[in-house]
Image 1 (cartoon, helix red, strand yellow):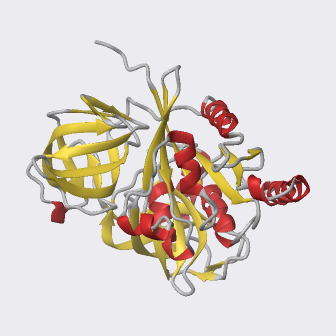
Image 2 (cartoon, one colour):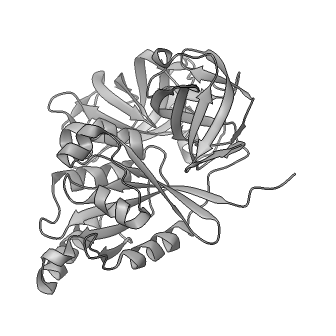
Length: 384
Protein backbone atom coordinates (compact mmCIF):
# COMPACT_ATOMS: atom_id res chain seq x y z
CA UNK A 1 0.00 0.00 0.00
CA UNK A 2 1.42 3.40 -1.00
CA UNK A 3 1.50 5.83 1.90
CA UNK A 4 0.28 9.38 1.36
CA UNK A 5 3.31 11.65 1.81
CA UNK A 6 1.61 14.90 0.87
CA UNK A 7 0.85 17.28 3.75
CA UNK A 8 -2.45 19.13 3.63
CA UNK A 9 -3.27 22.30 5.57
CA UNK A 10 -5.94 24.98 5.30
CA UNK A 11 -5.28 28.72 5.43
CA UNK A 12 -8.12 31.19 5.86
CA UNK A 13 -8.05 34.89 5.08
CA UNK A 14 -9.36 37.46 7.54
CA UNK A 15 -9.79 41.22 7.42
CA UNK A 16 -12.05 44.17 6.69
CA UNK A 17 -13.96 44.62 3.43
CA UNK A 18 -11.92 46.07 0.53
CA UNK A 19 -8.58 45.50 2.25
CA UNK A 20 -7.43 43.34 -0.65
CA UNK A 21 -7.88 39.75 0.57
CA UNK A 22 -9.07 38.25 -2.72
CA UNK A 23 -6.56 40.16 -4.82
CA UNK A 24 -3.75 39.01 -2.54
CA UNK A 25 -4.91 35.38 -2.83
CA UNK A 26 -4.85 35.74 -6.62
CA UNK A 27 -1.34 37.24 -6.49
CA UNK A 28 -0.17 34.30 -4.34
CA UNK A 29 -1.83 31.50 -6.31
CA UNK A 30 -2.82 32.77 -9.76
CA UNK A 31 -6.42 31.80 -8.89
CA UNK A 32 -9.21 34.36 -8.51
CA UNK A 33 -11.19 33.07 -5.50
CA UNK A 34 -14.28 35.14 -6.33
CA UNK A 35 -16.54 32.65 -8.14
CA UNK A 36 -19.94 34.41 -8.15
CA UNK A 37 -20.92 36.76 -10.99
CA UNK A 38 -22.04 39.41 -8.50
CA UNK A 39 -18.68 39.23 -6.70
CA UNK A 40 -16.76 39.90 -9.91
CA UNK A 41 -19.11 42.71 -10.97
CA UNK A 42 -19.04 44.50 -7.59
CA UNK A 43 -15.44 43.70 -6.72
CA UNK A 44 -16.30 42.34 -3.26
CA UNK A 45 -16.39 38.86 -1.79
CA UNK A 46 -19.90 37.79 -0.78
CA UNK A 47 -19.44 34.10 -0.05
CA UNK A 48 -16.50 31.78 0.44
CA UNK A 49 -13.85 31.58 -2.28
CA UNK A 50 -11.18 28.93 -2.76
CA UNK A 51 -7.63 28.59 -4.08
CA UNK A 52 -4.51 26.59 -3.27
CA UNK A 53 -0.74 26.83 -2.94
CA UNK A 54 1.58 23.89 -3.66
CA UNK A 55 5.20 23.72 -2.51
CA UNK A 56 8.05 21.54 -3.90
CA UNK A 57 8.26 19.39 -0.75
CA UNK A 58 4.67 18.17 -1.17
CA UNK A 59 2.95 20.67 1.12
CA UNK A 60 -0.45 21.68 -0.27
CA UNK A 61 -2.22 24.60 1.37
CA UNK A 62 -5.89 25.03 0.59
CA UNK A 63 -6.96 28.66 0.88
CA UNK A 64 -10.42 29.74 2.02
CA UNK A 65 -11.06 33.40 1.17
CA UNK A 66 -13.76 34.88 3.39
CA UNK A 67 -15.95 37.99 2.98
CA UNK A 68 -15.02 41.07 5.00
CA UNK A 69 -18.37 42.85 5.26
CA UNK A 70 -19.96 42.94 8.72
CA UNK A 71 -23.28 41.68 7.33
CA UNK A 72 -21.52 38.60 5.95
CA UNK A 73 -19.90 37.39 9.18
CA UNK A 74 -21.99 34.20 9.07
CA UNK A 75 -20.38 33.36 5.71
CA UNK A 76 -16.96 34.20 7.15
CA UNK A 77 -17.60 31.87 10.10
CA UNK A 78 -18.52 29.04 7.74
CA UNK A 79 -15.07 29.40 6.19
CA UNK A 80 -12.81 29.64 9.22
CA UNK A 81 -14.19 26.68 11.16
CA UNK A 82 -11.75 24.18 9.65
CA UNK A 83 -8.64 26.30 9.11
CA UNK A 84 -5.18 25.61 10.51
CA UNK A 85 -3.70 29.09 10.06
CA UNK A 86 -4.85 32.59 9.19
CA UNK A 87 -3.67 35.27 6.79
CA UNK A 88 -4.81 38.55 8.34
CA UNK A 89 -5.02 41.27 5.70
CA UNK A 90 -4.83 44.97 6.64
CA UNK A 91 -5.00 47.89 4.19
CA UNK A 92 -1.88 50.09 4.48
CA UNK A 93 -3.97 53.24 4.00
CA UNK A 94 -6.84 52.45 6.40
CA UNK A 95 -5.17 50.31 9.05
CA UNK A 96 -7.22 48.39 11.61
CA UNK A 97 -10.98 48.59 11.01
CA UNK A 98 -14.03 47.08 12.79
CA UNK A 99 -14.06 43.80 10.86
CA UNK A 100 -10.30 43.45 11.32
CA UNK A 101 -10.99 43.35 15.05
CA UNK A 102 -14.00 41.03 14.88
CA UNK A 103 -12.18 38.57 12.62
CA UNK A 104 -9.20 38.49 15.01
CA UNK A 105 -11.52 37.95 17.99
CA UNK A 106 -13.11 35.04 16.14
CA UNK A 107 -9.70 33.48 15.39
CA UNK A 108 -8.83 33.93 19.07
CA UNK A 109 -12.02 32.19 20.19
CA UNK A 110 -11.48 29.34 17.73
CA UNK A 111 -8.00 28.73 19.10
CA UNK A 112 -6.16 29.58 15.88
CA UNK A 113 -2.60 30.23 17.02
CA UNK A 114 -0.63 30.31 13.77
CA UNK A 115 -0.85 33.12 11.26
CA UNK A 116 0.75 35.89 9.26
CA UNK A 117 -0.26 39.52 8.80
CA UNK A 118 -0.08 41.03 5.33
CA UNK A 119 -0.22 44.83 5.11
CA UNK A 120 -1.57 45.34 1.59
CA UNK A 121 -1.39 48.24 -0.89
CA UNK A 122 2.04 49.40 0.34
CA UNK A 123 2.57 50.95 -3.11
CA UNK A 124 0.07 53.65 -2.06
CA UNK A 125 1.80 54.84 1.15
CA UNK A 126 5.23 56.09 2.19
CA UNK A 127 7.60 54.24 4.52
CA UNK A 128 6.82 56.43 7.53
CA UNK A 129 3.07 55.79 7.30
CA UNK A 130 3.65 52.06 6.74
CA UNK A 131 5.78 51.89 9.90
CA UNK A 132 2.97 53.54 11.90
CA UNK A 133 0.36 51.08 10.56
CA UNK A 134 2.62 48.13 11.35
CA UNK A 135 3.11 49.37 14.90
CA UNK A 136 -0.66 49.81 15.36
CA UNK A 137 -1.26 46.26 14.15
CA UNK A 138 1.48 44.86 16.39
CA UNK A 139 0.01 46.64 19.42
CA UNK A 140 -3.53 45.43 18.67
CA UNK A 141 -2.41 41.82 18.25
CA UNK A 142 -0.28 41.83 21.42
CA UNK A 143 -3.16 40.54 23.55
CA UNK A 144 -4.49 38.01 21.02
CA UNK A 145 -3.58 34.53 19.82
CA UNK A 146 -1.77 36.17 16.87
CA UNK A 147 0.64 38.15 19.06
CA UNK A 148 3.65 36.35 17.55
CA UNK A 149 2.53 36.60 13.92
CA UNK A 150 4.99 38.09 11.44
CA UNK A 151 3.89 41.31 9.76
CA UNK A 152 4.84 41.78 6.11
CA UNK A 153 4.12 44.68 3.79
CA UNK A 154 3.02 43.58 0.30
CA UNK A 155 1.55 44.88 -2.93
CA UNK A 156 -0.61 42.69 -5.14
CA UNK A 157 -0.31 45.36 -7.86
CA UNK A 158 3.49 45.60 -8.08
CA UNK A 159 4.20 42.12 -6.73
CA UNK A 160 6.44 43.48 -3.98
CA UNK A 161 7.13 40.88 -1.26
CA UNK A 162 4.64 38.34 -2.68
CA UNK A 163 7.41 35.72 -2.95
CA UNK A 164 8.52 36.56 0.59
CA UNK A 165 4.95 36.12 1.83
CA UNK A 166 4.81 32.67 0.17
CA UNK A 167 8.00 31.71 2.02
CA UNK A 168 6.65 32.95 5.34
CA UNK A 169 3.38 31.05 4.83
CA UNK A 170 5.47 27.90 4.30
CA UNK A 171 7.50 28.56 7.47
CA UNK A 172 4.29 29.06 9.43
CA UNK A 173 2.74 25.89 7.98
CA UNK A 174 5.79 23.82 8.92
CA UNK A 175 5.04 24.50 12.59
CA UNK A 176 1.53 23.05 12.40
CA UNK A 177 0.61 19.47 13.22
CA UNK A 178 -1.48 18.04 10.34
CA UNK A 179 -5.04 16.87 10.99
CA UNK A 180 -5.30 13.17 11.97
CA UNK A 181 -5.77 10.68 9.13
CA UNK A 182 -6.59 7.82 11.49
CA UNK A 183 -9.77 9.27 13.00
CA UNK A 184 -13.31 8.82 11.65
CA UNK A 185 -13.96 10.76 8.44
CA UNK A 186 -15.87 14.01 8.92
CA UNK A 187 -16.47 16.80 6.39
CA UNK A 188 -18.75 19.76 7.23
CA UNK A 189 -20.40 20.91 3.99
CA UNK A 190 -19.89 24.50 2.83
CA UNK A 191 -21.19 24.22 -0.77
CA UNK A 192 -23.78 22.10 -2.55
CA UNK A 193 -24.25 22.15 -6.33
CA UNK A 194 -25.01 19.94 -9.32
CA UNK A 195 -23.05 19.27 -12.50
CA UNK A 196 -24.57 17.83 -15.66
CA UNK A 197 -23.52 14.21 -16.00
CA UNK A 198 -22.36 13.98 -12.39
CA UNK A 199 -25.29 14.90 -10.17
CA UNK A 200 -24.94 16.30 -6.67
CA UNK A 201 -21.56 17.51 -5.43
CA UNK A 202 -20.70 18.79 -1.96
CA UNK A 203 -17.50 20.51 -0.88
CA UNK A 204 -15.81 21.20 2.42
CA UNK A 205 -12.67 20.72 4.48
CA UNK A 206 -12.06 17.19 5.72
CA UNK A 207 -11.57 17.58 9.47
CA UNK A 208 -10.41 14.03 10.18
CA UNK A 209 -9.96 10.60 8.64
CA UNK A 210 -9.90 9.46 5.02
CA UNK A 211 -12.52 8.71 2.37
CA UNK A 212 -12.28 6.62 -0.80
CA UNK A 213 -14.34 6.24 -3.97
CA UNK A 214 -17.19 3.70 -3.65
CA UNK A 215 -17.34 4.02 0.14
CA UNK A 216 -20.70 4.41 1.84
CA UNK A 217 -21.39 7.70 3.61
CA UNK A 218 -24.09 9.29 5.72
CA UNK A 219 -25.17 12.93 5.60
CA UNK A 220 -26.13 14.19 9.04
CA UNK A 221 -28.22 15.34 10.80
CA UNK A 222 -30.92 13.90 8.50
CA UNK A 223 -29.25 10.49 8.17
CA UNK A 224 -29.31 10.36 4.36
CA UNK A 225 -27.35 7.41 2.95
CA UNK A 226 -25.18 7.67 -0.15
CA UNK A 227 -22.16 6.28 -1.97
CA UNK A 228 -19.08 8.19 -3.12
CA UNK A 229 -19.10 8.34 -6.94
CA UNK A 230 -16.06 10.57 -7.22
CA UNK A 231 -13.57 12.74 -5.34
CA UNK A 232 -11.86 15.93 -6.47
CA UNK A 233 -9.23 18.10 -4.78
CA UNK A 234 -7.25 21.11 -6.00
CA UNK A 235 -8.06 20.75 -9.68
CA UNK A 236 -7.72 17.00 -10.09
CA UNK A 237 -9.62 13.77 -9.55
CA UNK A 238 -8.38 11.67 -6.65
CA UNK A 239 -9.11 8.15 -5.40
CA UNK A 240 -8.74 8.94 -1.72
CA UNK A 241 -9.34 12.10 0.32
CA UNK A 242 -7.36 12.93 3.45
CA UNK A 243 -7.94 15.11 6.50
CA UNK A 244 -6.77 18.67 5.88
CA UNK A 245 -7.80 18.70 2.21
CA UNK A 246 -10.42 20.82 0.52
CA UNK A 247 -12.53 18.10 -1.09
CA UNK A 248 -15.41 17.88 -3.55
CA UNK A 249 -17.48 14.70 -3.15
CA UNK A 250 -19.77 13.44 -5.91
CA UNK A 251 -22.67 11.76 -4.11
CA UNK A 252 -24.85 9.02 -5.57
CA UNK A 253 -28.64 9.06 -5.27
CA UNK A 254 -28.92 12.38 -3.39
CA UNK A 255 -30.75 15.47 -4.63
CA UNK A 256 -29.22 18.91 -4.18
CA UNK A 257 -32.34 20.08 -2.36
CA UNK A 258 -31.87 17.41 0.33
CA UNK A 259 -28.55 18.85 1.56
CA UNK A 260 -27.45 22.26 2.83
CA UNK A 261 -24.44 24.11 4.19
CA UNK A 262 -23.87 22.98 7.77
CA UNK A 263 -24.70 19.32 7.11
CA UNK A 264 -21.86 16.86 7.69
CA UNK A 265 -20.58 13.96 5.56
CA UNK A 266 -19.44 11.04 7.73
CA UNK A 267 -18.98 7.30 7.52
CA UNK A 268 -22.11 5.44 8.70
CA UNK A 269 -22.93 4.65 12.34
CA UNK A 270 -20.10 6.64 13.95
CA UNK A 271 -21.51 10.10 14.67
CA UNK A 272 -24.99 10.91 15.92
CA UNK A 273 -26.85 14.24 16.08
CA UNK A 274 -27.62 15.87 19.40
CA UNK A 275 -30.07 18.47 20.71
CA UNK A 276 -27.88 19.66 23.58
CA UNK A 277 -24.17 19.86 24.41
CA UNK A 278 -22.21 20.71 27.52
CA UNK A 279 -19.22 22.99 27.09
CA UNK A 280 -17.20 25.92 28.32
CA UNK A 281 -17.80 29.44 27.01
CA UNK A 282 -15.75 32.65 27.12
CA UNK A 283 -17.18 36.12 26.54
CA UNK A 284 -14.93 38.64 24.81
CA UNK A 285 -13.99 41.91 26.46
CA UNK A 286 -16.67 44.48 25.71
CA UNK A 287 -19.42 41.87 25.32
CA UNK A 288 -22.81 42.65 26.90
CA UNK A 289 -24.00 40.87 30.02
CA UNK A 290 -25.44 37.47 29.08
CA UNK A 291 -28.11 35.94 31.32
CA UNK A 292 -28.55 32.20 31.70
CA UNK A 293 -31.26 31.09 29.27
CA UNK A 294 -30.42 33.69 26.60
CA UNK A 295 -31.03 32.74 22.96
CA UNK A 296 -27.89 33.11 20.81
CA UNK A 297 -26.65 32.40 17.30
CA UNK A 298 -24.41 29.32 17.44
CA UNK A 299 -21.68 28.69 14.85
CA UNK A 300 -19.48 25.62 14.58
CA UNK A 301 -17.60 24.44 11.48
CA UNK A 302 -19.97 25.42 8.62
CA UNK A 303 -23.15 25.30 10.71
CA UNK A 304 -25.20 28.29 11.83
CA UNK A 305 -28.18 27.67 14.11
CA UNK A 306 -29.75 29.04 17.28
CA UNK A 307 -29.20 27.82 20.83
CA UNK A 308 -30.33 28.66 24.32
CA UNK A 309 -27.30 28.98 26.58
CA UNK A 310 -27.72 27.87 30.20
CA UNK A 311 -24.87 28.43 32.66
CA UNK A 312 -23.93 25.92 35.33
CA UNK A 313 -23.49 27.61 38.72
CA UNK A 314 -24.01 31.11 37.27
CA UNK A 315 -27.11 33.23 36.65
CA UNK A 316 -25.28 35.55 34.27
CA UNK A 317 -21.89 36.09 32.67
CA UNK A 318 -20.06 39.40 32.27
CA UNK A 319 -17.65 40.53 29.55
CA UNK A 320 -14.36 38.64 29.76
CA UNK A 321 -16.01 35.93 31.87
CA UNK A 322 -15.78 32.17 31.53
CA UNK A 323 -18.39 29.57 32.52
CA UNK A 324 -19.43 25.97 32.11
CA UNK A 325 -22.68 25.80 30.19
CA UNK A 326 -25.22 23.78 28.29
CA UNK A 327 -26.33 24.76 24.80
CA UNK A 328 -29.83 23.60 23.88
CA UNK A 329 -30.89 23.43 20.22
CA UNK A 330 -34.27 23.37 18.50
CA UNK A 331 -32.75 21.44 15.59
CA UNK A 332 -30.14 18.65 15.85
CA UNK A 333 -26.44 19.44 15.45
CA UNK A 334 -23.42 17.23 14.76
CA UNK A 335 -20.44 17.95 17.00
CA UNK A 336 -17.88 16.04 19.01
CA UNK A 337 -15.72 16.73 22.05
CA UNK A 338 -13.22 19.60 21.69
CA UNK A 339 -15.07 21.15 18.73
CA UNK A 340 -14.87 24.95 18.91
CA UNK A 341 -17.86 27.23 18.55
CA UNK A 342 -18.76 30.92 18.32
CA UNK A 343 -21.81 32.62 19.81
CA UNK A 344 -23.34 35.86 18.53
CA UNK A 345 -26.12 37.99 19.98
CA UNK A 346 -29.34 38.70 18.08
CA UNK A 347 -29.60 42.48 18.27
CA UNK A 348 -27.34 44.11 17.42
CA UNK A 349 -25.91 41.13 15.57
CA UNK A 350 -22.34 40.81 16.86
CA UNK A 351 -19.84 38.25 18.10
CA UNK A 352 -19.89 38.02 21.89
CA UNK A 353 -17.95 34.87 22.69
CA UNK A 354 -17.03 31.32 21.93
CA UNK A 355 -15.92 28.12 23.50
CA UNK A 356 -15.37 24.40 23.31
CA UNK A 357 -17.63 21.36 23.41
CA UNK A 358 -16.88 19.12 26.41
CA UNK A 359 -19.70 16.58 26.17
CA UNK A 360 -21.78 16.25 22.97
CA UNK A 361 -24.33 13.86 24.51
CA UNK A 362 -24.76 15.00 28.13
CA UNK A 363 -26.73 12.90 30.58
CA UNK A 364 -29.10 14.38 33.15
CA UNK A 365 -27.33 14.30 36.52
CA UNK A 366 -27.45 16.42 39.68
CA UNK A 367 -26.14 19.97 39.26
CA UNK A 368 -23.24 19.54 41.70
CA UNK A 369 -22.17 16.28 40.08
CA UNK A 370 -22.48 17.88 36.64
CA UNK A 371 -20.20 20.78 37.61
CA UNK A 372 -17.55 18.42 38.94
CA UNK A 373 -17.80 16.19 35.88
CA UNK A 374 -17.42 19.11 33.45
CA UNK A 375 -14.52 20.61 35.39
CA UNK A 376 -12.73 17.27 35.17
CA UNK A 377 -13.50 17.06 31.44
CA UNK A 378 -12.22 20.60 30.91
CA UNK A 379 -9.01 19.80 32.78
CA UNK A 380 -8.53 16.64 30.74
CA UNK A 381 -8.57 14.52 33.90
CA UNK A 382 -11.15 12.14 32.44
CA UNK A 383 -12.02 11.13 28.91
CA UNK A 384 -15.33 10.05 27.44
